[in-house]
Amino acid sequence: MSDKIELITIGIVVGSIRKESLNKKLASAVIKLAPPGIIFKNIKIDDLPLYNQDDEQNQAGPVTRLKEEIKTSSGILFVTPEYNRSIPGVLKNAIDLGSRPYKANVWSKKPAGIIGISSGAIGTALAQQHLRNILVFLNMPVLAQPEVFIQAREGLFDDQGGIGPGSRAFLQSWMDQYIDWIKKHIQE
Image 1 (cartoon, rainbow, N blue to C red):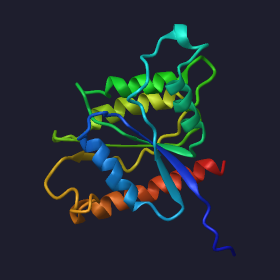
Image 2 (tube, one colour; image 1 turned 90 degrees about the vertical axis):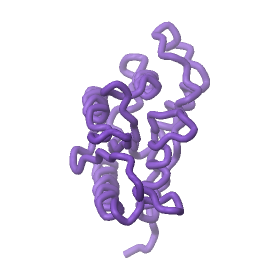
Image 3 (cartoon, rainbow, N blue to C red; image 1 turned 180 degrees about the horizontal axis):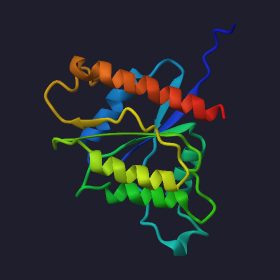
Image 4 (cartoon, rainbow, N blue to C red; image 1 turned 45 degrees about the vertical axis):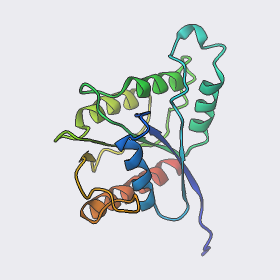
């Protein structure tokens, strides 16, 4: 038996580009719940051009960087706000850029998890459902349960930027299941 820890890299795509984004804060807090050997890398989407099929054969530098970061990730964690009962346009744009040109979809077979936070009572439930529909079409196995719909409330985050005690057990359970999901799919 070996004590060696196998490193797994997970790309994080936050669907908000706002400086003080609650979803960026959630992403930073939830990754602290991961076990040793898991490396999270933020995948930047705020510099991407708008998807245009005319550009598919000569993609901009930020698009090729995005695709390479996805390719080198064992899985993807999407952390999304909800805008007008769906996902933000900046997130949909990143997904579209990564899936094109036709038959060059870098998202395919990357196991995914989805979480999100908003001030509304249902959190990001509808955005997550829309995102699931998109990801399934792109051939991404998406963790179905448990679902994580978080309403921003006092005490969700602790003073160190981690998850507060009231939500820690639930989100730790989610993280444990998400990591098991990633491991299951990268072994296939």
